[in-house]
Length: 249
Ligand code: PGA
Image (cartoon, protein in one colour):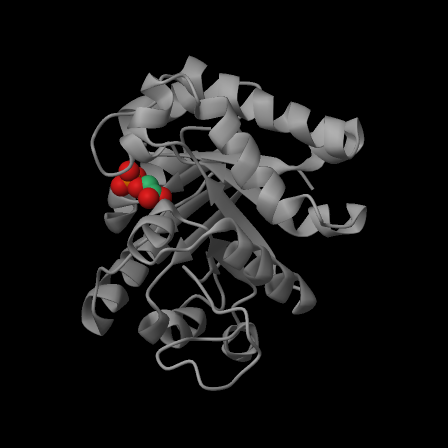
């Protein structure tokens, strides 16, 4: 269902004590009703975070997972391991995974399938690099990323998919896409889904924007018609900043 969502991607930050501190501060915050709030700590802090946030409305989600059920994949984590600690949503295809860990569309497709087989919700990230945009290829790049990893899905599967447009040039750089650039791409992606599936499915998918979202630009971005929320990196590491972003809706 199309929801308003703000998810904090903590990336490889915060040890157990720092996680504990941030969770405590987040629990003291009042979040606007009707906005789904999620946080993605590192694997080692997931179980602790799930327990700490048991009575809160904040959902704990994972930053990544492997596609296999189990086996000889040193250092990896499976969907059922995430389910086992109470995590039922996972971020897939973040540009840092694509860039530093060579995650390609074919691998992401397998991860998408594994998450859905485990009844998980996935936040599927996509976005062009600076050179793609400068060459005017950004729509093609995004179209291929979305189609290659998701367009084999059955209609019903889309109710478990959240999309996140994250232009690589805007991640962690302080440079944000303008609200118009975000809207333009979100609208393009919603149209793709209309063409590949149906208008109903396209209208039900939440599409988040990510890339240097801060309290002073969140409101303008979130008011755009096809922007349903944000995937927040750096600014999610501070409870006050993060709650200001959530409350920008
Ligand atoms: P940023 O990261 O907010 O620090 O730019 C966004 C993301 O990587 O999801």
